[in-house]
Length: 69
Image (cartoon, rainbow, N blue to C red; front, side, top):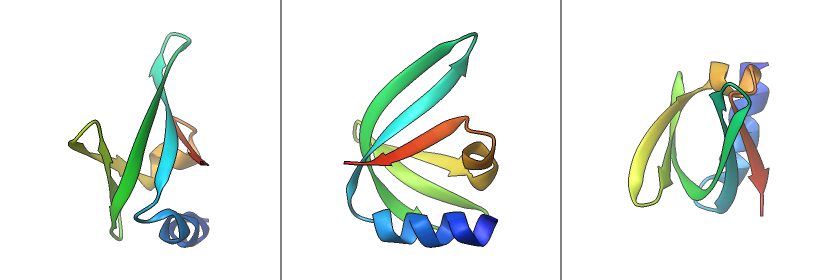
């Protein structure tokens, strides 16, 4: 399952994508950013000129949703 996510993120690496971030209590935030690095346990995205680290568990639990633009 995680390998499937990593493979999909490799296709998105360096490209502009939309992040839908669940902030809890029915609040969601949409951001546009770029996936910069993919590691074994997490990946790094640049959102608003800030590097943010996400785990693959965030993707599995849908705390973050990544959509191709």
